[in-house]
Image (cartoon, rainbow, N blue to C red; front, top):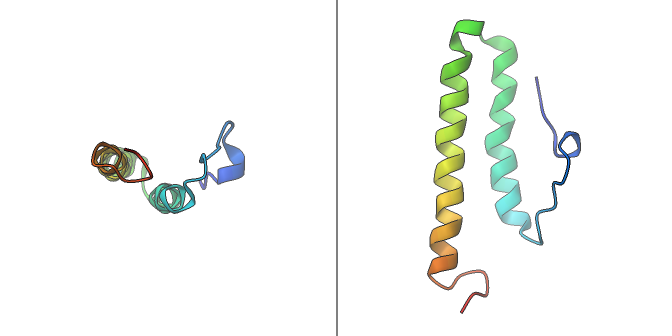
Length: 71
């Protein structure tokens, strides 16, 4: 199962193309579900969740430190 950017509603990256591309790369791992037994799906979801949390927390850290044009 692959979920593309066009499959999700309200997917405006607000001009953050590089950030959105990193998130899309992480979400691409959902394609692993097709080749994984149902028992292994939780592990795939957990790995993706962890990677997304790390990526999104980095965005918060960069904003807090004045990146992305923030004062």
